Length: 376
Image (cartoon, rainbow, N blue to C red; front, side):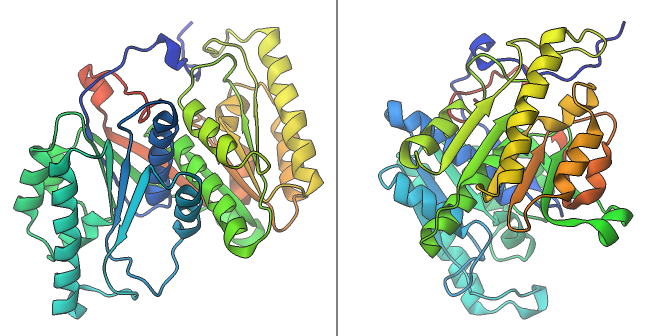
């Protein structure tokens, strides 16, 4: 029988690379900046127990005076780990198109790029995030050749993450990883979609990392409003230890022990289609009982159902029960569902956001190992 199952191999089984890579997240779908924040959180989680894991978050086109989706998440990061993250914002506080570019926009882009060049040359950071650099290049606010050459000459161990629409081809050619976020429209969801249900699927990187960014965002919203925004992270198909999100979740729980709950279920093995074991069904149901009770309780503002999609796709859980629970969820509870699947379950039609992460390029395909604090 052909092995077409979907499983997650533990990080313990992986060797580790030492060289840094250039990651590009682009496309019209949601999840690009949030995925970058998930990588930041992983790196910070590593930095708690190791030296040399400092992060720079440089945000283009996001000047002061306007709020953005990831602001709350960054606030949570800075409050929890002030010694491990730096943030710089540049640009004006309003949207504009190519015909509206002003000398101020050019100057702000140049200021941000000067910071980026200094950070890259300093070798003080393990991760540099260049959020919305792509549209800056697309608008002609920075010389593409200079940017590409600077990134090409980065320190060997430095990870660089670039986000935003409109990536120039020369940067795509240089990138070691390229994930495109593609939005999907469900005709049923326009009539029956439930606000606060987001689904991230596909073979590209960024699904679980985006969910971690959403967890940060919920915690940050609670900080800014003086309310407790509790988060549940429920993971299927991930028994044992050594998974990609371990350090990131540990970092969250260390700084916000009263706001983050985490449960994991599954065997410490890959589950192949047609090779499911009784323990796989038992573990999947155990995880769902926890998630269903949490969803009904109204105690959590954000519930992350990580790898629920492949669990349903492997027929370890009945989709009807999940649809019923989502239909009854509290209005102010946000549900984030992740994981690839071969067949879309019925609850996809309930989501108001569905982004597919498409992998165009990944360094693993070139035989490059994953890296602790970035990939796991």
